[in-house]
Image 1 (cartoon, rainbow, N blue to C red):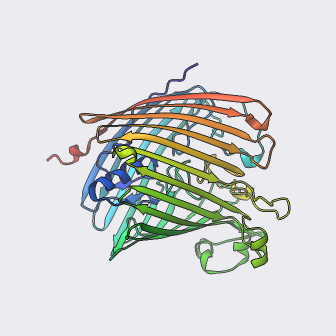
Image 2: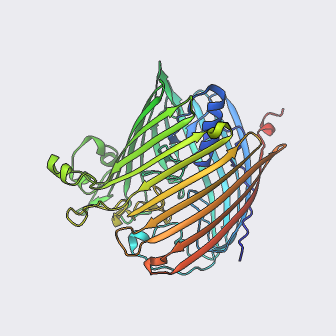
Image 3: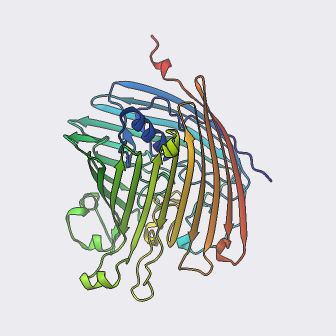
Length: 474
């Protein structure tokens, strides 16, 4: 049966005026292309949400969505929208303001999905937090509250704030080793820069994040520091660093204070030894003249004991993402092509030097929140290839893509193989934006069972309108 998925949505690739660039990765193509067209430079937005304007501006955007899905839960990087089997509806309104000292946004929403029953593939725990698992059991499933809510006080370019807005860390469009909008945004405290700061030809951005995630077995603390610097030469060179630590609320029967957890970067302690950590570096080359971006994201979940250990097992605990984005290929300024490949497979010598899986610590529910991972959606012992080629101008865009993803690459013979084909069309008509999306998914060796298949389809249509003018009337 062909699935029908209808969405009346306001947040599409032709975003109307907005104060914040959200974590939604599809906005990235529009923002980067727009910046290249305006001043022949690349927009550095690897840490989002990012403040776009500081001009005492209000924005009001409404959204209404309706969809249908005939397969297992589907679609990655969807934030609060759990795309379960059957029809669903989403309604929300986003209000935002940005000024010299105060910036904020919030979005009250209501979401309901039929969430009809789908077969459980009975995977092992480490593979049970993939996006196609029906973690939300209620039928129908209902969710409401405030999302994309953030409030910041800024002085001399440094901001202090609280937020539950989804975050995205990294240069990729499809995935990230440490943080995406693949699940519901959790509340956190943030200190740092909300947008790029410049000193001569050097731009920089840094943030410290701290929270306690109640939905883990140990109500774990999450502490992170992200930073990057760009040298605006030809090419533009960007380097970045990201350290994430999940630490327990309780250790050996004693509770760990928030202060100790927040200060965990500065001390070597038993708390640190019992935590789950990732350390990630970024290297990006932007070529403004040719409108090309090349990047690598390289991280580790463990450390080498000494130099000999590094020489013998160089890929121990290593995860990586490599990618390119090319705007204006074939002498057409409206075309864009890209490729990303994420590899989170166990180390090649895992049988001689055991290495931890990415997102493999059960104490912290495998780095998940509300049933889905906040980092790479492909999960542990996986790889993920994403290819896209599309057209976008100020009136319309069409973005076909192909996704080839494997789960349990070394864990199982055979591994699961997922293939997705997606067609995304968006059109601007007067004050509205119309949207149509179709996705076809095939899962081979489902549940790691030889030749077992599972298939699904998704299609959606949408409409958007910016109501900010209502706030300007006398």
